[in-house]
Length: 302
Length: 295
Image (tube, rainbow over all chains, first blue to last red; front, side, top):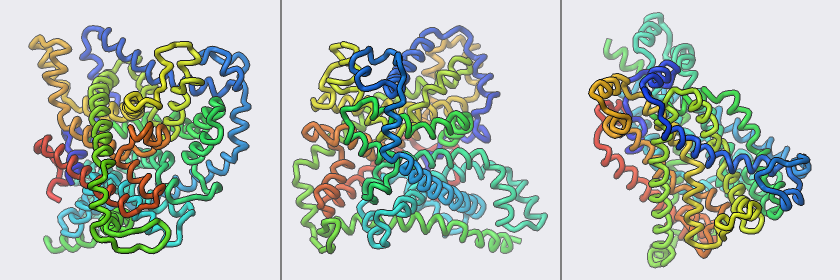
């Protein structure tokens, strides 16, 4: 409960997440003099972020002998794809497919049922049952869910799901629920009450109102939480480590770790595996950057 | 009329059932289960036998526990101290509208995309004393046994954690800064307040609840730095980075002692709840606090 209110606490004075371009411009004009010191610090931070990433990417295109004999920050004179070939031959296509299955299978149901729950909590929040449910979700925010991994392992064994992709999907759905409900509830609360009233006067059921009014109006928030939770599931490590064991069921982070264990001396190949597993996310980031960043920024500071 | 609305609203209850069922099955039941398992003996495969208070007394007298608590505390505090000022400054920086800042922001957030496993693997390679970046550049100060010396390894963990999570928290602060009414700054400028003065008199106080939110996520989140540390150092050298979550995993899934591991898990949950409560108390009550409060 405590974190819940903390997460939801910050000012609810602006509506719909004040991260629009209008706000940007307004604050922009308030910077009367050029802020050289701030600019300098900004570039310094960029270096800290970018140099490791730059090194990872360029090294992944070098052969091992070139890597050892040349300046590690110099661009490769003869870029090679042999490291990538090696990674793909290590069955990474299968691991990629596993990751996609688990991510899609966990994220979409999680967001849908969380949306339904958030709608019910906002629209019918005075009922005792709904308040209890809300309290349970808020408490979930304050609990480090990894701490429940041992009983989760036990439950998965008892359900005869150990070492299957479903074993990863089911707990991932559950772990995504508290935060998703909280963020979506904050956005549904922003839908003007008159719209709900007019739907009701038109004789629409709550079910219809939910899908035809609340769903489209919270679409930006839905996209944001979907992408955020997908990222969480895609990058998860502990659940696959504990709940699967067969090599053919590995998801990407686990495959990365095993690959690194086998080829730790071959730094370019290890880094190629890092780049390759991040590539799909990077593509999504390039496509949906604005949506994700402004959505996260608004969602958490609401 | 009132009853009509009442029944209508009451009928919404079932919409919450799927989410509640899922979260109960894999969130609440395990939470109760972990407490129950802490009073049993189980090797992870065979039968579960009652063990009374044996696990608790053995874990609570084990010198490994205060050590793991201390390491967890160190990682939590140091990473909070590093991340919070940086995230606030970067959040304020990117909330400004200048175009070059928008471009920088896109690059700042890149670490958000990498998994902890990927980051740990990349840094492990980068910091390798023989094959890493420092050796290749011939820079002696970069050629350290980064992950082999206890103090250095802890520092590396804090650095890598900050590298990974500052982007996320600066995003939260960016959102917080953009919600500060512009009129406050205009008034301050008319009163002749400079940039630094504006930052300390307006921005920071206005960000109070954002700071609480971000700190709560940071502090509770730091209890779960499992994957990063597991891949980067596996708790070493000589347990120097063996935080609670890692201690739980190693006892349970490597040592096959699920009972003692469950004791650690219960402690982890209690620490998390206590910290969240304490931070909540620290923040006082938000005048704008939502309807969520009443629940």
